[in-house]
Length: 178
Image 1: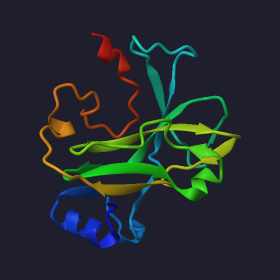
Image 2: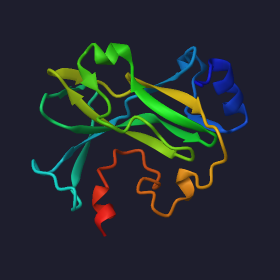
Image 3: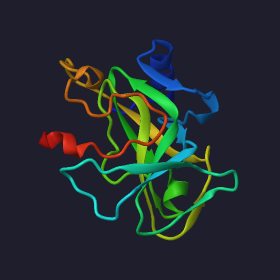
């Protein structure tokens, strides 16, 4: 079951969902709009390896915006820091973003109960698109969980994305091969 606006607000009041900064006007009927942070990243190498650490270079989006190009993977980040203690958060692109040919995630649209961080976005585009820091980029939808949670994400020793950071985080897949 997806949480309604009232349920999202109730959970924010009880600190079971945290969204910082929170703006009541960004709350939809059953979702919350998130925005593109000011930092983007690109991988340094054209060939990426699943078994090694692939390094990125980060840069800030200038005030006049930044043109994303097809056939490139950009890592972005949400302006909003979030915590989810009782629900499964899903991040989906806004329809207006999709209509510009922008995909905000390749496969990682679902968070885990206990995810406490900014969201890294895996951005790709169908054609050249100029983007701006602070523009609406996606929406968070919260699903109820049935049953007891034994190990929230933020308590897992194997969790690779627990370090709180407001910049995009590259793939940590290589840690699975240690």
